[in-house]
Image (cartoon, rainbow, N blue to C red; front, side, top):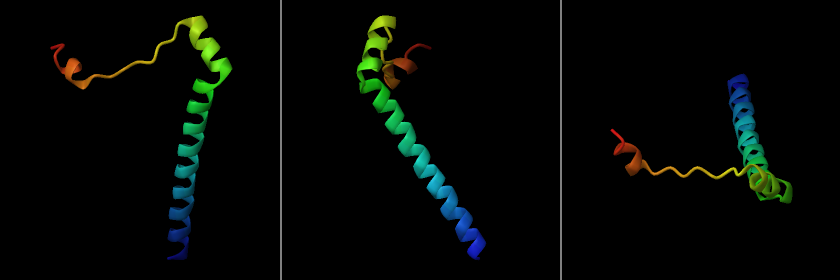
Length: 58
């Protein structure tokens, strides 16, 4: 029983660490001066998803 709880706790810890790192990197790069300069230089635009418009394309 103790081994199963340890595995579950380990998996949960890894998942939380993954979420924290992903959010920190994504928002950190996007809001940094270097990230803004790269977006302006390459003309990268954020994609917006409109589910209603996606369904109307049929």
